[in-house]
Image 1 (tube, rainbow, N blue to C red):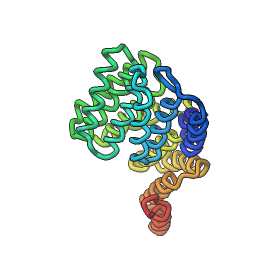
Image 2 (spheres, helix red, strand yellow; image 1 turned 90 degrees about the horizontal axis):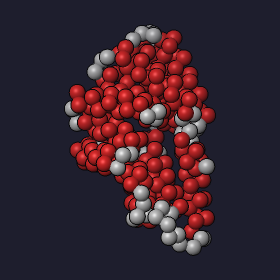
Image 3 (tube, rainbow, N blue to C red; image 1 turned 180 degrees about the vertical axis):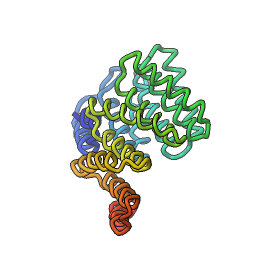
Image 4 (cartoon, rainbow, N blue to C red; image 1 turned 45 degrees about the vertical axis):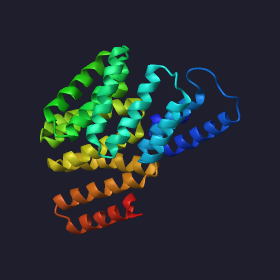
Length: 272
């Protein structure tokens, strides 16, 4: 249940369910199999903590997970190693993150793990992008997208499209960015991933505003607002108010823009 909740982006409920499972496992005898349930729960908790921005907990859960399953299959090892590499990335240790992702890619290819290889290649591409290696980053992400499609990996296909959209947007390839974001939105909607649907619709609202499509921007923003309110996320609401202010300003409504900016500051998680 915890992993299903995490997959749809309901991270608070997911962590509650996983903590309950971990508590229940503590009352059971020690497991002797190569991949104990405790390791699986801890790995899932690490990923949820990462998604919530709690990097210290994510690293602790991931390390504990690997310690609980020293004989685990390579696929599990790569799953946890990916979380640890993402923690480095989130801490802006991009060189270390890239090295970790490339190491995961080599292991995945050596063991014939196609899905894990797609994920590692995609994340290595992101690390290269943050290190200023734009052409290599684009090549890796486009190859990851092709591989994901070839093996029917809808999850990684969606993320590859999202990340390519981000690169296209930063390199002023607006048409390609819009196409990638729209394709990512379709796939995240099929997957039922509310958190990523919220993120993509916000990106689409911003980009639509930038090209003067204010009607499209408002439509995407309403989708993002609805999900932010339904999921009770201050961060999501802060982003919505930021873009709402941008749209108002570009339409010649400075008072409304100022009000949205004030609301965004109040909603921002950084206020604590």
